[in-house]
Image (cartoon, rainbow, N blue to C red; front, side):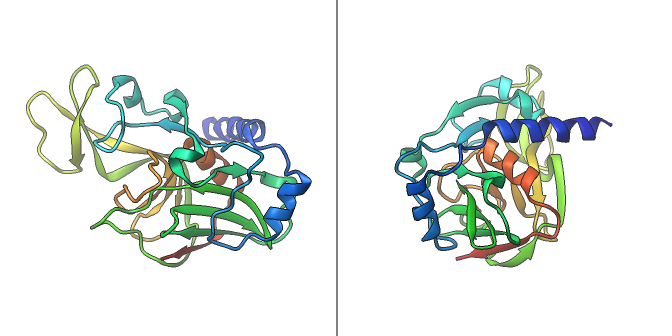
Length: 236
């Protein structure tokens, strides 16, 4: 029942925060879109909303309030497309006939959702950094988990819940600190090795341990819109 309520609230939230339908000019631009190549719609701002579910050495804040594990309680900040370079937008089901698929382009740090030949959503991402590169290839969504946590990576926190450093699962805890696994809200698993798309800190450049991090509201849209079995193509 709890999971059903979460999904119903998610659907309502996604519907509320989706972009207004594309204008005639935007439809012309979208009609010429090519998979994997970022699209800019000059008459609208980026829809990207960043919520930091968990502070890490890659994040911009050590605020202990961000340690709360519920994605609904994370702090929120608007992120400009000028900062992230790739514009984020979501048209959802306004014109989505056709088979759904996901294209992730590592060189552009962009993810796109297509329905047939229609681009229905685009977002900046942060993929795997050096030494933890996101593997190119053809995959599919294997699992959906709205409140997923990493079984490999996390952070040390003190008794007040303040972030004290990145950590790996299994590391010996320093005196006075506790290990907390990293939240990965709206997780969409795409490989057997645990790589997936999820909400996280997005810089517009490679920054993760291999997963594809999306801005919070984009991760919500993706989670609601995409089903298990959806093809995912990751391009160099």
